[in-house]
Image (cartoon, rainbow, N blue to C red):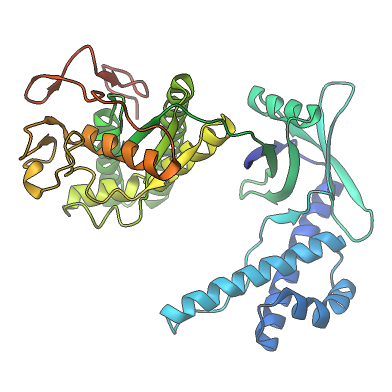
Length: 410
């Protein structure tokens, strides 16, 4: 089994000569993408074979690019055209891609090299023109980057494709794809994960990740944006939006890491719910719509999946339909089982528990069936002490992402 990880590096500011070469390569790549896109439209094709046969020889004369990079530009244009053709089936007014802005330059895995100098610095060699023309640019390396580069140098993974581009502030970046060959182990059971907003995640082993402080912080950001918009400070609003997005991404990374570590410690697979239509399955209110729009469930699920695969933990995707209304003890399904948003009580056998925890238990059971893993043991359902409270011996309140008390700094 393979797993790819994209690692983003900042480049040390290149000198003027190298910067001009990289800028020229970026512009040539953009023009090549636009040219191949127009050629594909003219030929009415999305076939790589046809487009290569009809245009590649002429493209080699027009654009000063490495041959492999030129082929990457062709693939980029074809991918954009296929996406356009799909959109046009739904929207007749869809416009074909024009590539009017600069794009990250794609470099094939065999056309660049990362190595370490005797001084300890890491350098990447990039192709910037046709032939064997390359330039060497040092990387800005943190502890995380150092670990990934040592894995690459030691053979724990292999390099995939790479992209380089210049940001609006003038800095240069590269994204390197690392490919890991992983051996999947046979798990002992399944850990179900139910995602939400009131509770960020609830696991089938009674672990709860509370989302109240995260919601509080996002509400404060929303109020701040409204105040800035009323004052006409739109540039500040844009900067605040980027800050919130980065904070949310970091939060999802940390939550995904905790869930994967827990599954790894317990030797279990992870069952995740298919998130298609999650916004359609919730009651619509203005406040809830804003929270759903800012809470990227798909991103969190994708982080859990790729971190799990790197850790050798299998992942199973299940249909979550009806999981919060089905009794995990007797299997009875009824709308009456969930009379309130947060509480479940089976109308047949009387079993009761937190509704999200019931969903996680059912997700785990479905994951066990789909993956062929050992099912949940009899009696795995925790006893209850009082309505709305799990037994202290069987529940874990996990609020590890934000401080337990005090207001987070905005």
